[in-house]
Amino acid sequence: MVSALLWAVLGGTLIGLLGKLVAPGDTDDVPLWLTILCGIGGCLAGDFLYGLFWDRQTLGVDWWRHGWQVAAAGVLVLLVARATGRRRA
Image (cartoon, rainbow, N blue to C red; front, side, top):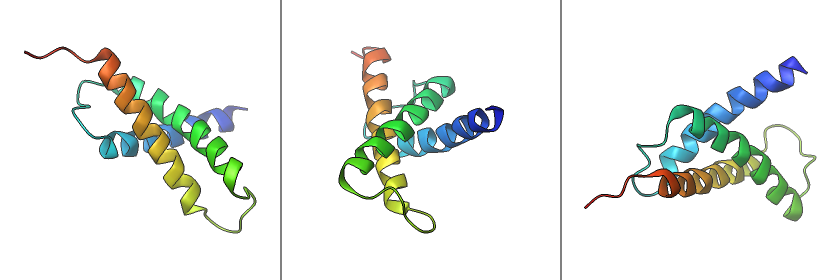
C-alpha cells in the first residue's frame, strides 16, 4: 500500500513535469503540488485511454503508454493553468 502510494507520487511528479513541459502556453503559474496532481491524473487517464485501443500486457517498457500519459497530463496542466491563471491586460 505504501509503496504503491510512493510510486504514484513519484510517477505523478515525473509525468506532471513532462506534461507541463509539453503543454502549450503559459503554465508557469501552476504550483508544483497541482502539477503533481495533474501528473497522477494524467497517469490514470492515459493508462485508461491506452487500454481502450491497445493491449495493456506488453513485454518490457511500453513507451507508447507513457506517451499517452504525458499527453493526458499536458492537457490537464493546460486546463488547470487556464482555470487558475491570472488575467493579463
